[in-house]
Image 1 (spheres, one colour):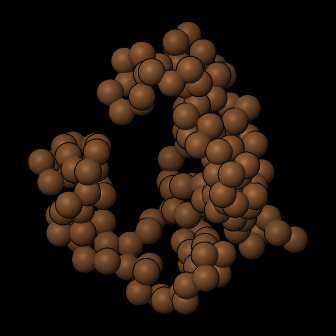
Image 2: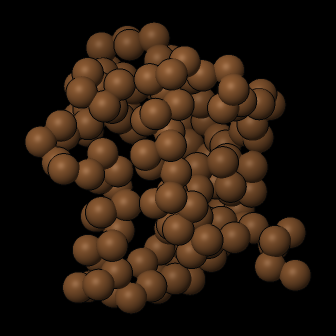
Length: 143
């Protein structure tokens, strides 16, 4: 997985390049970079977006919670998301969506992964956990 993922820069010594980037931002640019967990955003969109807007100093608008379905919002995006315009199967839900929907399925368990997937997940888990602790949290976790 580490070597064959076309969207992961394989020339980086650290397979967890997102964590390395987060550390760079934290150490050089801002000691408290904004971190959003995608599951939190999907399950608590208004709470997370309000806190995000506050953190970056922009006013929150409820219009951020809904959008028009279709390819137009994705036009001009580079990288993997540009496949949306080409009708890539994995992006059908993104193109047809018009709002955030809560997660309804459970992720696979660690035990259900094959050995290569376990190795990859184990290599990035410490960095993910560190970033996760600094994320914008939903109200249910701030008490």
